[in-house]
Length: 303
Image (cartoon, rainbow, N blue to C red; front, side, top):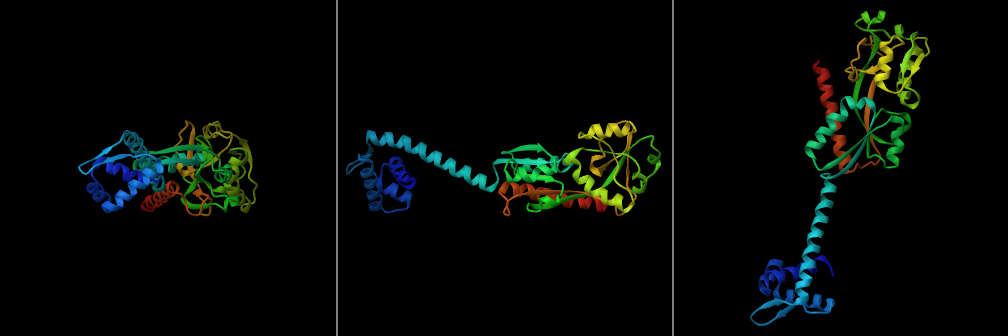
């Protein structure tokens, strides 16, 4: 017995009139009679008492009707839930993101997503870029906001932000008096930087730039927490490089200066996912991030 047969029984039970029930179902009265007879034969008992004057439910019919209405209700709920998930209206989206994305893309994109899809459950996971390709492959996250990595080229991705780096210096450092700091002046100084894979993107960007100037990148101290890095800069142990969007992190004794070199590296963020055809919620998030990229570019042009 399928759901359409169940609906036939419910219609007749509601109308208790073959002609009216047939009209509501859009079929002929003889066709309805045949359907009811086949259903009763399949069940092995009568659901309706038929006389020339009226149609009534048997005791078995009343029991069937109660369960049938629940089945149809649950079936409709299932269909609606499935359609909502397919449209990206409801569901769960697990977002991996690098620390820097928490300054702009993540708060803006999640706010926009929540405003249009309030029933979607968001899970936010701060990670380093090197961890995200594997996390996407294992499906522990659905989408990533990360640095572009050479070993992540198998992923689908969209560039969502490009911005200049600024140097963070102790306020009493001689270079802090400059409006813009040349890279050459920084090359001999100790670079305060994150340790291990977390710093790989930054090192890959600045090592070639320093090499062109005849220097090796000189790491003074490794520490993974950004507030700790800035605190070490404030103490005079060295400098660090931050994307411009991260320079809102204010700690007494630290100043931020743009780099003077036109060819200086620029920080990029991409939104990345695995499937070529992105699932609905991932696609919605990617489109929002792309729109934010356009807005950011317009703001920079206006400035």
